[in-house]
Length: 344
Ligand code: SAH
Image (cartoon, helix red, strand yellow):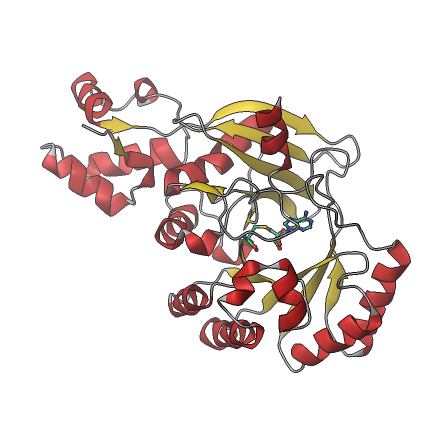
């Protein structure tokens, strides 16, 4: 029998399971707190639970605890990149970043990815599997334990396409923002997508307060097709429409991510077209200097080109920032640490 993944359950589900075992419902509260507040490593640590119940739990359930395999620390800004091993031996990456406003963790949502973006290292070997809600949560729990400080912000921008793992993502967000758990405000959670239109629209209807980040990377359908195969399925204007819908439904301003690639999407005309595409939208653009991946031959834009691009957008009245590169001296880009590890 497959053991039940109890860390992926909300309190109601946990309660239903315990009632089935013939236990009282207040046990759910206690166990939930061990899992999601105290972040225990074994059933043994549940000190207010009887030995008999612990045995039942050991026999029927698993805890889902990620194993820390490697941590790389940046000497520049203290950013820490973690390589974790899952129960089945698969590896994923997460990143911890310290900002003035708090501690932020960037988590993975899948092992690998099937979206095929040309500049991305996470997708080189395709998708292996989805992460469970518990596996997404435990990246944050383990890092918080390792650092000894509270995590205040979470971005789902690591390996994988979160909207390609929709149900688990939703469950993860509910558990993460649960006041009886880690209680991270939904406003401090960002989910980044390459633009899976039906799922963006579905997410809008959930009326969460999370920030949606859209990986745009091109000002036109023609250029986007060269970089992102997902554009074959969802045309750029459909994606923008879905962003507008998200804003109308949730009142949350969209963040657009735009990775600048030298000679590909960084000229004046690109900036002009981009401004036109986003005209009148309540949004914010994050310019990201591309992180070169050795399997691909894309180059970073010159720093002057990046500044010119930003200034041009500002002239059109667009809200724009250049993303500060965190952890430049460690394997920065998504999927690179895992890739190097598997090559060793
Ligand atoms: N699948 C999601 C989230 C994961 S990637 C998405 O596509 O949004 C997080 C962001 O990093 C995305 O905007 C992605 O396009 C970008 N990215 C991936 N590889 C990169 C690289 N080598 N350099 C710069 N940005 C990259």
